[in-house]
Amino acid sequence: MGGRLVRPQSPFKTCRLVPEERSCHEALRQLKNPFYVGDEVALTQTSGWAEAWCSQPSAYAVAANCTADVVAAVNFARTHNLRLVVKGGGHSYQGTSQAPDSLLVWTRRMNAIELHDAFVERGGDGQQAPQAAVTIGAGAMWIDAYDVVTTRSGRYVQGGGCTTVGVAGLIQSGGFGSFSKNYGCAAAGLIEAEIVTADGQVRIANAYQHADLFWALKGGGGGSLGAITRLTLRTRELPETFGAVSGTIKASSDEAYRELIARAISFYKSALFNRHWGEQMSFRNGRLKLDMVFQGLGQQEAEKTWAPFLEWVRSSSSYSFTSEVQIVSTPARHCWDAEFLEKTAPADIVPDARQGASDRRFLWSGDQGQVGQFLYGFQSVWLPSEMLEENHQRDLVDALFASSHQWKISLHFNKGLAGAPPEEIAAATNTAMNPAVLNAFALAICGAEGPPAYVGLPGEGPNLALAREQAAKIDLAMKELLRIAPGGGAYVSESNYFQSNWQKAFWGANYSKLEAVKKRYDPTGLFYMWHGVGSEAWSPDGFTRV
Image: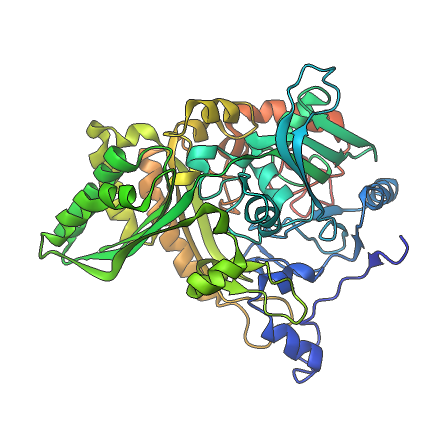
């Protein structure tokens, strides 16, 4: 491998024994820097999940620079019957980015990005029309893609909301970003992929060749069908502005809180259930927190949209603003422009402050709590659009009222495609995602986490008693939502580690087709991930056939 075969060692390995060591001090100082975490082959962006898994380095890793390196790793693992893992961004909540005693294919360095004015897929024999696109290496993060496509070139590519999420992992999970209600899921924007399959072959998958594999890569789950080396995604015209609405409203009583939920849902249905609006409303113990975004509207239009709801809130003594509602907009080209944001909204971003680091990379401030998080519990469910109909809204309100007294419930409107343009829903139909997403107006998420708990960190380790207590509350909260959406399923990337009937929950009727693709391209199960396609044939650690 020319020196690219490495033996990962956690930077915290010696912290308990020699906490004053310089390397330990630096690792602790950078603990909440996701760029540092991502650059450490031994670490993952989530440090573990209570009573499920903890972040542990692979035995060896191939720090791949090119496709040939990935081929060498895959061939070696197959020949010697090794446990194989693929890691790009390392954002897996399920712990699938590493495994003890495994060989890791680490694609972090494969992060080249190339724009195309007229990209044409291979194998189409002239049938396909050229289109604007971008080719992205498997190790790139979305901040890298947005910097090239939007900040520098004035185009848009549908990607993830968190800037440090890996491009390849998001596409393979389906993928949602803040503006997915207009641009659809990220997987539907995939035009072509280069992938190394279990036989060590480099395949170009698109609509004209290896079409079954191409379909499966669009939402079939990362790391279970092969090792992606690069992807080509369509780009779009960029709107003039992006904007945000934020604030928190508090109700003075349970009766007022129930009415607040009812008004918020009714307002969403009548004014926000369309291509312009995305992101979240969160409910918890008498409070409604707004973290919404918009596109395709000017600030005055956004303010006019929200005026009736805010006037209703202000007209009643039953409500107060614990943080005043702010409506702001910015030129869309500067949405991921670090230099611009440092001047205009420095509190909203956290730059990579390491010496010599790229000044174009940053993390949204609201996402920093996720860095190194140790999950206590996490669940999601797609909520069907029928719940917004007038004769069902009361059931939804009752469920949100009951569940949010147990734990915080967030409705991620951009992670459901109901209300999106018909052409984006049609494009998502041709992905491997659970068809439930097509008719979902939102993804409801409920989760809890503690501070980083990497092996070797000084201290007592994760608080498992608190983890069990909060996981039980999440169970109770989600039980209320599952009562009104029993067949809603869950989003594969943001779901319960202990998800029951996961095949149906993640992929619905598409799972049998995914199984057929898996058997064709990986008949021996070389690529294994927890609750991935074909994983039911293996023990939970991925080492033994069952």
